[in-house]
Image (cartoon, rainbow, N blue to C red; front, top):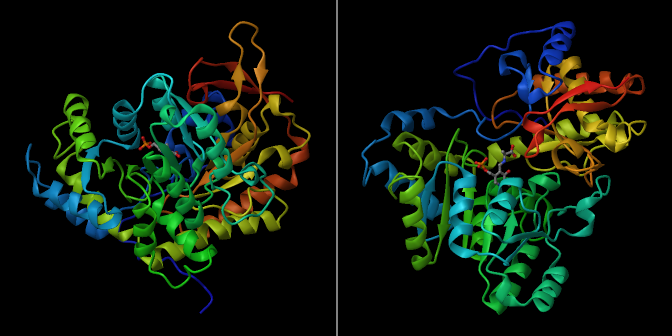
Amino acid sequence: MKTIIEPFRIKVVEPIRMTTPEERASLLAEAGYNVFLLRSEDVLLDLLTDSGTSAMSAEQWAGIMRGDESYAGSPSYYRFEEAVKEVFGFEQVIPTHQGRAAERILFETLCGPGDLVPSNTHFDTTRANVEAVGAQAVDLLVPEGLLPAEPHPFKGNLDVDRLRELLEEEGVDRVPLVMLTLTNNSGGGQPVSMANIREVSQLCRSHGIPLYMDACRFAENSYLIRLREEGYSDRPVAEIAREIFSYADGCTMSAKKDGLANIGGFVATNDAELARKQRNILILTEGFPTYGGLAGRDLEAIAIGLREVLDEDYLEYRLASVRYLGERIAAGGVPIVQPPGGHAVYIDAAAFLPHIPPLELPGQTVVTELYIEGGIRGVEVGTVMFGRRDPKTGEERPAPMELVRLALPRRVYTQSHVDFMVEAILDFADRKESVGGDRFTYQEEVLRHFTARFEPLD
Ligand code: F0G
């Protein structure tokens, strides 16, 4: 059979409230044209994020009932710890309420002012946590990672030559760790190859620098290695994942992604002394080491999710559904980051709406038009999110790319939902010349995309 089906049946359903384009246009105007300010009941297909939005399995719900809420030494913690050790192979496992809490603990214990933390690309919360301890986050992505239309199997790779140069020029002592984000969310959900991971690891080990993974989407990255990298097509995905982490000294994880859970995360390491320091911070801000920032029931859901996410039928369906959405809209003439990544399709709004200059926010226009057209909520990853405004002159600097991310929640939407997305996007493409850009009417200095308000320019 050529058709890949969703490898699950649906046992519980959540109704979607149908709305018309007219209703949506008025709801959007009320929300100041910012889709973050919409009520989620007013969204038909919510592609804002794949984080915390996964559908849990019957086994995970059963685990929720089994969750033991003892303050210390809960069996739920030990099941969680065993799952993390089995999947990732690290000795020390510290639960946190989500990924950014793990990041904060990692950087607080490893870095200080003046340090440099290289990565393929830091996710926003990772960058913010590096900067919060006075260190500097440095992105060293391979050049093809910044060319949306250029198909390349591993556009998430770190540029090893630039890392070598940085170590020579700045000195090894300034670099307390190197990170790799798997997959590279900010750069289109693109994977990192095993060859690149191995090379980065060898370079780090030759200088005694620890390598940490941002493991949020480790299973998707592992499966993309199996699909795209020579020598891996017959290897079980769980084995590929273990190989990845064998090259690292630890990881941070948001279980809201490839943990298939609605909340949770952890930091893991092989360094017992570091873990001791980390547990002290954990107690101060998250909780006792056997629950971190989580309820026992959450630990159970994650323990089960981390094993389920490596199921190969699931991963085949997962990657096929992202590819299906990407290939169908690309065939209809919509420019996307090629090839489609692990968790999302990224529309290249600058190429899609070339009549709208970056400072008139083409990505914001795509986001609002897709909501009106099909009730689809995506997210702008361009000048609204990453552009910078001079606080004195008010002058705007555009972001390097104008992307719109359509993130697919895990196990939530069926193929007919995806067909509906394709139809809505292509219907908008037919009338795209008639739309103009947008402008800010209100913005905050920090993380402005969450609260900004806009006005269409036409
Ligand atoms: N690292 C990456 C690569 C992420 O994508 C995220 C979250 C985090 C770390 C932080 O994890 O949210 O549990 O604190 N990404 C979400 C997204 C918010 O929509 O891509 P968290």
